[in-house]
Image 1 (cartoon, rainbow, N blue to C red):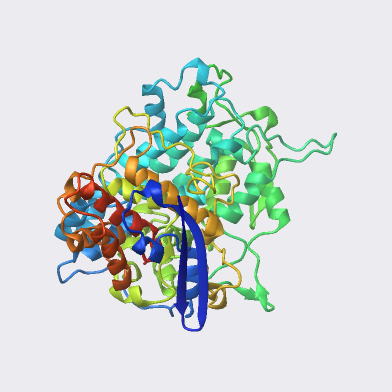
Image 2: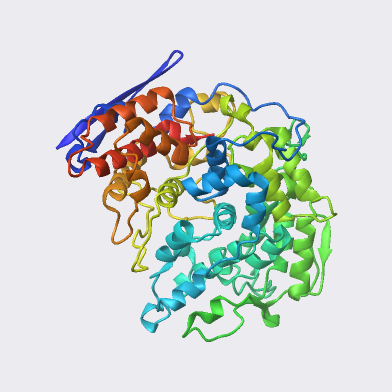
Length: 574
């Protein structure tokens, strides 16, 4: 049967009526009272109604790091893990409470990768000749890494970088696409804790990026035919990866000229830089195996521009990798780099609308880690995660703080919390980009270089827009995608997919006590951010299921988890 779910949200004078459908029979619930209260509420409308109202906080003078003088609470630890991992567990919450934030971060910096995506594909036989024109294995290894690899902070930073430095497998026009895309993600993960300049060099010489942004085999100008070098990478590398469109102060505010924002670069700068990115080609010609897509690109002198190339007030000559490196050095030294990159990393990990003070503090660390080093990723990550705007309880009450959890993070949060595994190593979750039956997002499958959502997106005609705030993840959020997400997660929470299943052994011990059960789910999944009304509604739904029935304990656990995952309190994380 199909049960209609109507939800009314009231915030001041604004009222929104959201109505959608949920398959009550497949949910296996005895009572849908609580589900009717919160189950299919659209977070887009809920946050638009309630989340805006104040402009971004004024610049703060707080230090970059937090000195913890009192013991952390489990909810504080869980909130921190929500910023720094793909999803925490009760054991991880306890570990952070015991060690403190910074010690946990430093331990994560020291945690090596267990296996690369490339090596996993090889180990599982995906390099068989039959897969030469296939994407087989890519989604499996992506979910495997996000859900099961122990290097949690690396995974989170790597996915933040993939949101910023986008390559989507469907736009990689090579054979062995699964391997080419996997090699690109490996570049981001391997370099997540190095230096942003090193990351720029690695992506510029990566085959998948070369194909995705069409500079692979980019040819120098031919005066006889009038052809010019492809400008795609030159433009996007400045606009999206490094500098942005407008000149910035260190706090991320725009520099004005004659009443309008001063532009960062011109078309002449794009054309000049494009001359540098010519000649980059595969290191070898044979593609009967995928190996060539892992090797860095090399310069083919016959199609490389060796004359002068001018851009951003810099001129490089001579061509070859020396010119590429000189160009990247010039971009890396640009004044926009620290605030532009710092703000996007903050947005991906902590909050959509960081204050000018927060951006400025992190940008200062990006510019100089205290030892004269620019772009030190470890220093930048620490500055982001330890800032008072990330850890301080005061930001929990600020309307401008927080962000909408992107859909993939909602799934991995559940999966990590409840020990999801795939004994066969199939990891059969697959492509989750369908907006009608799945998440509306799948990592490594963005269709354009602009990602699934843009950092400056604001949902139109909402309180968020009226407050002058941005909410990037709302670009892929609407009533249809919310219902698809809830239904997809309901199936996963109950039954898993293939042999990808959760292990609820630990939390089943709390099934008989609804208050304890809901509190545990609230702490681990939602960092204690469920409102009293939401907690009461979820508890009522749990209590409607007999704890002594054969499937009662499992059903109670599953409904507590599902309703938490569906609640706006969980989706709009602070």
